[in-house]
Length: 86
Image 1 (cartoon, rainbow, N blue to C red):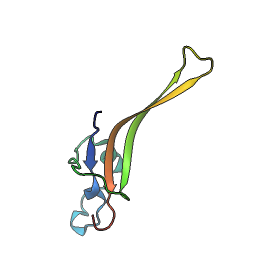
Image 2: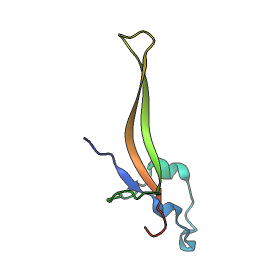
Image 3: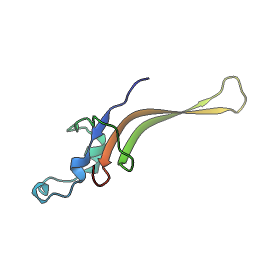
Image 4: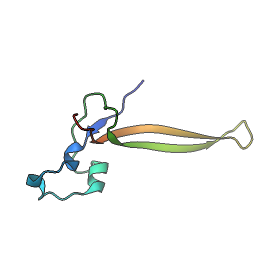
């Protein structure tokens, strides 16, 4: 069993007037191109809002006629918001 990276992206979604000078760019947050957020090093609590990144592939069966298979590969998870009290 292999693990996937889990990023803590909650800082981008906190309401804080001191950071209002920073621009909010969802594309940069979700792609992590310019700045990689720190790892989320605990279990994701129930009720958390997350973005799940995966790839999907569709395959035709070589043996069965008209059979198709769909494969999902989990790539990463971003924790966006935590429930109250977390």
